[in-house]
Image 1 (cartoon, helix red, strand yellow):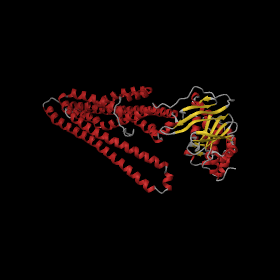
Image 2 (cartoon, one colour):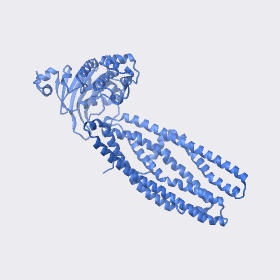
Image 3 (cartoon, rainbow, N blue to C red):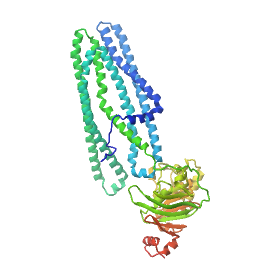
Image 4 (tube, rainbow, N blue to C red):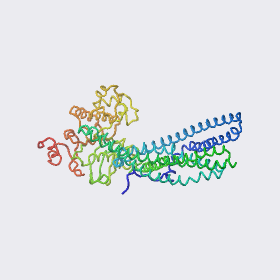
Length: 592
């Protein structure tokens, strides 16, 4: 059984992923080259410090040359200033590179996600996609600032330290290197233990995030059933599990840190013991011993931080795998080449020919479904819940694709349409109209990139029976709409959605339960607005309330995935079939 992707760790280095990351970084290769130039410069200046201390001790302090010591002190101060400036520049360049790569990746991810089909969003929760765009890209940024880039700098510094130690006294260098195998064994042990705990931390964090997202979305229900105490207890338990795992991770990190410190101290002790003999034998100067100890501390410092850098690289590789996996997810279907709409005199605005459709892993929703909607015809679609009415609207705009048969818009198969052109031609007002955080004006002009005159907005609002609604809002068109339009009622959101559709002005329009969940006053306004909205265009009205579609030109009755009846209201009632039974159930009386 495969593990959830939040638990998979993978390798700390994957050449395939690194190659792809380089492709993303290539536009910023000048910054990368500048970093590569700064690393050896920084390492050289850093290694110069202990050597200056050696010279100061051997050539000035021990011989009493105090005037010369002042010059060495000044040179040492200039070295520190240069090292400070180089480190600032190096940090700035690496941070800038990481931020630019992160910006490019997020932009590419968001653009790609917008091209994916509706079925993809059915399979992937919003929280997971947000993690890809935000957290996983941030982990890749950490690779530049604290992972791979820092490791490159450490390798350059370590190489320089090893060369200097061997040049100063190769025997003393071997004393230092004698402890490296012990250090490698300790680091490997703690790394493996930390890897297991790190996987546990990620798994428990994923569980906590999922619980938190669900609780926040369902807070109204939690409060309605007075479950605050139980939910708080569940959160405390999950939060405690995460804390315990993170504490174990901290123990291993601290143990590795302490182990390296102990081994480093042991190396210094050995140097003092062996180096003192070398000094007494005149094989090493006292200043050389001091410098050796300084270089040894610089030798163990990057090794001490290896655990943290390994974790950063591991997280970056896993995040890169997910990010590129998402970018490699191809849309289930792509648009055709036809960007222009059909002729204005097309006989059928919409036609289904033997269409069958099933959602992934589910039973057939539509079976050999056939019908047509004329160019200026108002057609109502009714049927029991779950019969595929909303699916038909989504197939019209190719949010999903028929498994069998053809869906034609304007006499053209939707697979031949350019998707953007098709969705400009076919509009949909869903049962739950979605308003974005922003202003009323921005929400109304959504389909025209904001390039709509205020006069046109007011005209659309008047036709949608929403002029008074907007006038009563503080600021009118500039009134603030909060996230998902929560500061507006369901009826108000629906009226604004109708006004938005009037501005967008598609040739074909589907309305999915436009009058559901609204009060009587709002329903009256929406009905009046729909008269204006449906004028001179083909429309498909999906409705449960049969009272709202009695004036439709034609009513289609969907049952078990097939069109069972078609006709006007009076004809269907008189026929005594499925529509008549639905009418009887809603109104509690025999059809007249």
